Image 1: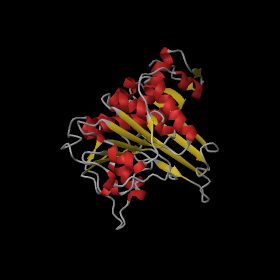
Image 2: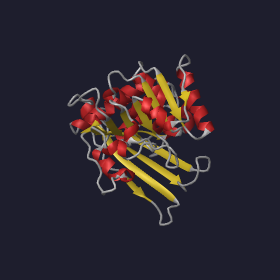
Image 3: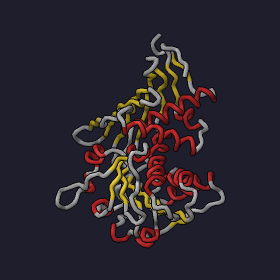
Image 4: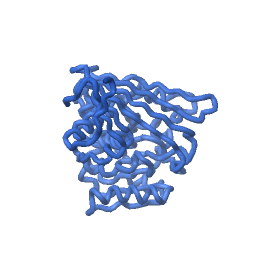
Length: 329
């Protein structure tokens, strides 16, 4: 990308929402961002967080470097009154990109859409790498932001899936998830279920994206041989981790830091067997046998925000979106 070193391209939420990008492109970009973590080419330090004593807000900052693209970025997230319901929550995220090869600023953009795509893209990559060879049925738990593109990306990664089930408690959210899927796969249907246990017993792949108030808590004993459980938010009980045959994580360090609600009653947290970067880079297999029950922990990686944000910035330039601001003139 060419840019004036005294200017910065600003991409508003409307600009980012207008960018045309394919689901395959999203999966490819996110996979390319994760692989270099295996050899240290990229850096993904733990995030910083601050909150006032009354917990009326929470803020995060994530700094990282994509060695493949040679881009450095900072992702900032601010939530006011995070305990409110979705309609009243005030949540803002931004991503600032710098070209580390040329030493130039690239773009400042709203990061809402990027965050809503990179998380389900990682879940889809986990499924492609770790699902049993004969996986045909998937269950999505939750209908929030990270759930709305989960099924389209999952089917793009695993086109042989035959049955897609959805459990949610918010009618509006259920409608949006179904609409988002139908817009991309009009010849396919989503089966909305109300019996979580029966659905979990039938599922080869389970993705828990629900909020903390969800009544869903899938237990390990409900899972069949070879089941893959991917946890993004809530919806899976700790037993799916502690009784798994194999544990995969985007980051073992982040799981140890943010997986407090998965701690065993004896105070221990099941260790991670392999990180996703080692699987995607070909260093190890995602699955060692067809009947292995796998638990996968999907925590945010800022390198995926960086890579996807950089791709969005490239597309914005090609599609003549955004505004150049002479910030340093």
